[in-house]
Image 1 (cartoon, rainbow, N blue to C red):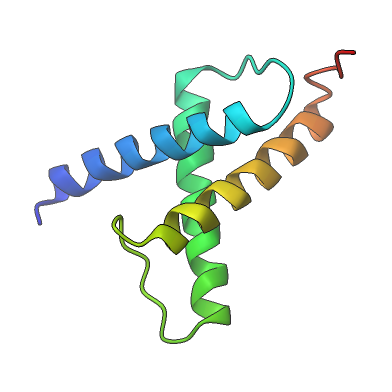
Image 2: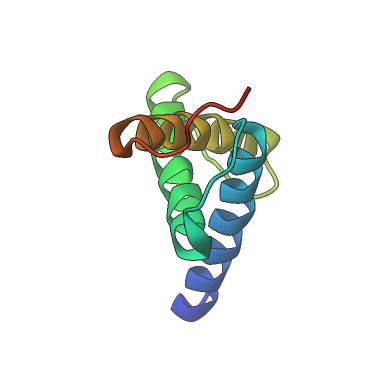
Length: 93
């Protein structure tokens, strides 16, 4: 796979995972598209590292549902931490 294609796939994967994480965390997020992509990529990388530590040998691929689920879970955790640290997203009642 070429390097450009790999980068494009990571960007799209990060965008999808980031949007899913943002949709599952209650309230409004104003982090923009670039931070959404970075959130999804970070969730994928950290989720992949945790998965490889827990389930050796572990290979996360785009067609592996556990890779998607792990990426979304970690992205949600990262988004909640980001919101707490930056003081964004007041709880709406």
